Image 1 (cartoon, one colour):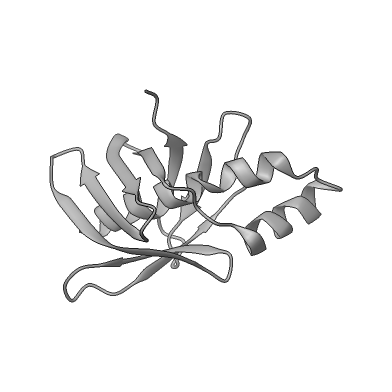
Image 2 (spheres, rainbow, N blue to C red; image 1 turned 30 degrees about the horizontal axis):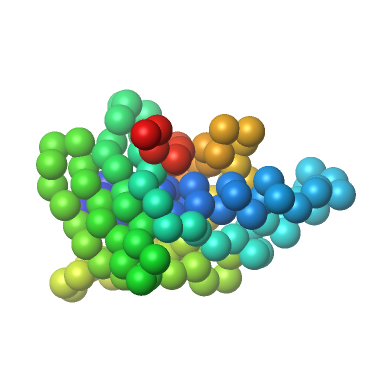
Length: 129
């Protein structure tokens, strides 16, 4: 379940790359701070990779919902929101909301997402058609 929530968070962060690419960055540090503070995730499908390889996909919907699908086929659905520069996933049921910290996207739109406790980091990238 934790991995699925991670997938969702990473996918959400991938959407931030479009806005980050549109705005010129005065300095690398200032750009990273600004991107984190104004990050919003675009609706879309994202692939999530952890240190063991492909972890699954996350779909962020325009209505503020998400669906995580792990590599083993398990799904988690819930609500998505950007809060205080972090991407937050609130799964259905009694699981708590988890807000991930993201890095600015690279030239391909991929970025890193880290759990609140810093124990897990994943790479999130826009899914290829």
